[in-house]
Length: 457
Ligand SMILES: NC(=O)c1ccc[n+]([C@@H]2O[C@H](COP(=O)([O-])OP(=O)(O)OC[C@H]3O[C@@H](n4cnc5c(N)ncnc54)[C@H](O)[C@@H]3O)[C@@H](O)[C@H]2O)c1
Image (cartoon, rainbow, N blue to C red; front, side, top):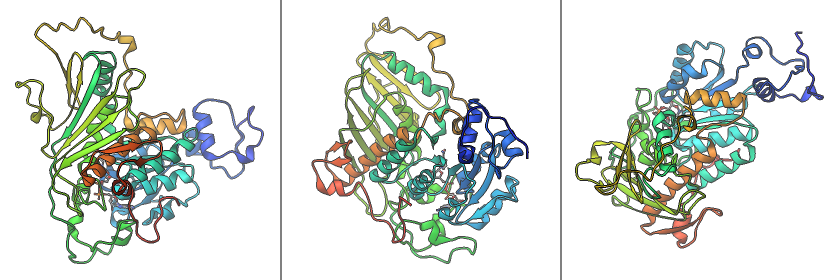
């Protein structure tokens, strides 16, 4: 067997594959590989062994980047989707699973990419982290406040060992960096208010009635997973990759509506510039409450304490037709379908994903209060978002949207949905994860799961 010299490792029997990938990638020395360790393509290319859980739909957007590594497992509740993925990625040897719990038992895994339905994200992520795996999970990372807190806590306990990334890939757009620089450098003075909005509307009356039987290839009971039982209806499914989520994400048991959908991207544009953790209050108004379907139109708002570079701020989220007021009649915010706006003591900054606009207050505002950042101090480009995670798995474990960042965002937004359901302004203790002024709302921070399913397996 081929040997690689070592000068650092005493107990070579205990070298894990993940430790090997990390240490070789970081160039920290040489290793003697324990007998049985696979060499060849993996070792030479220093590749990760990845499981793709949710192999079609949004999963397809990951084929190219993860196929630079070893995709050793494909998991999907629809066997036809596994077959498509195996063919399109040319992976005849990847192991195949319909149940992600079985998939995570595969011993040679280093990392998982999760592209399943929203109501399973926190479950699969937490189980994967429990096995020490690196995780990339599509947005939204959780469907309840409690789920977000469990995932963050688990991640924080492992952050020196694993790399995580929430799938908000728009974060890699350069405009995210420019907006952050402008806000932090005082281009609109002292930040006071932040607004983000999205105009997508997918109204539904309620869960779909029983209709037909699931196709033979679909394991419908596994698709439901931890969600309460709802009868099969083909209306929950869409064959177009990446559009399937628009068939189920508005139902409380399967998603969080626009907050989990486009909201995850748009709020990220705002959040990236405010260095916030968790809010102290939440309130929301919107459509009349429907116990089956999340609201189309809603406005939620949150108060955040000051941090080391700004004072207290209020963050507002608007969806489905609700909109903030434009600072100038000649700026029609409705023309920005998904956007963010920042108000400071000296003016406004308005942004969509790719561009931004500053409106200083007053006719004589010359912005002399603001010193543009020198070119060499600008935030460097993030590069390819998925590749950032792959590199982090093998290196310094650092990503832009790790599970601490991602859980803070989604916990806040889901707390907004709790305030909407409670119809009251809530006081929130982010350290304990408790609504302190309303016991009924506090109970809505979590929900019941189907028998046999646990988030902590
Ligand atoms: N980052 C983005 O821009 C972006 C874009 C679209 C979708 N998404 C996210 O990706 C996720 C999937 O969305 P979609 O539109 O592809 O949905 P979808 O329903 O079309 O597809 C999900 C895929 O996962 C499979 N699946 C569902 N539940 C599973 C389970 N429990 N175990 C294994 N496989 C399972 C489905 O069979 C399907 O192949 C959603 O969370 C959505 O928010 C992100």
